Structure formats: C-alpha cells, structure tokens
Image (tube, rainbow, N blue to C red):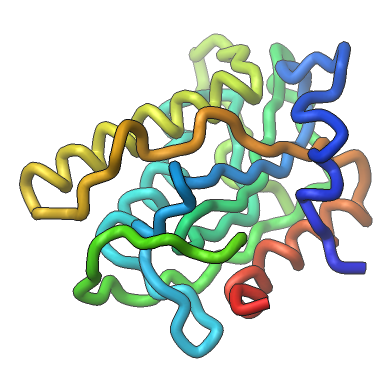
Length: 205
C-alpha cells in the first residue's frame, strides 16, 4: 500500500500525550509557504534541484554534525516541500532504533537556471546517531529539530536572495506547522523509505 501522509494527519497534527523528545524515528513533511515551487523542478520524473534546493539538502545533511543525538535517514527535496526521516536517540545515546539500515541517498540532480516562485500541485544505521566522545547528549524534541531546520534554511535562503538573486518569498519560507508520523516498526520504515524515494515519480499524480 502506498504511504499517504495526509491520511495520518487529518485527525490530529500531533498525537495527544506523546513525548516527541523520546528516542525513535519520525517521518516528517515540511511544506513551503503557499506551496511555492522554490527548490527546483521535476523533469522526466526526477527532481532537479536548483541552488535553493541544494542548500536545503545541505542543511539536512549537516544536522547530525551540529546536533548530537539527532540522526537522519531517507530524505528528498521536492519543488515545494521536503520529506525526511529524523531519528532521535533521546537522553540515552544507545537508545536508537537498532533496526534502521543505511539510508539510500536520493538523486539530487543539477541546479538549473530557475524562474520565480509559482503555485504547485500537492504534493544499517542512519547517519549521525552516534555521540561524539566527551560530548553530553543533547535532548531535542522533534519540534526543536524541525524548527532549527526551518530557521537555518530560511536564513540561508535570505542570504541567497540578497547575494545571488534567488526569488524572494512573501512573509515566511515554510508553512507554520509540519506533518509527522511516528515510525513504529520495520514494515512502516520500509514503506516510508519507499514512499520518499519514489516521491518525484509520483509528482504529476
């Protein structure tokens, strides 16, 4: 069955009473404000990142280095949103989900010369879960990680607007909220990884 994130989030954005700082793997979707296509285009069912899209991908891949206790797994940048798996080890650096295998790296493509924002249709171990020696574990909730990702990508995007003439965005780069799904078992993990890797092929659908 194809994983449909919207089906999980129509009832509630967050699971009531759930501690989103505890160790676990989480599937997240973050959407650009107004669903503006600012990160690239789908060409022949493949995502072709522009400069802003490469920036977003870089920030995602850098998170484990900046935030000990935070790992990353499968990830894709789409024209107006991102999908990714965030792994939190919690206060115990050994509390990570042992079932997670090495992630597949999506095809980033090359940054073409792009036009301005436009409306778009709807849209082993993971990296970085280890704890640097001598560094106390950093306990971040899922919301903390998402907010830091949004903040850093927004700052770098603003720099791109000023220095490189990237298309400006009205108000904010990302929508205020985000979608999440708690990954509870290997079957769910495999299904979500497949959904992420195949997302560019499903864009026109």
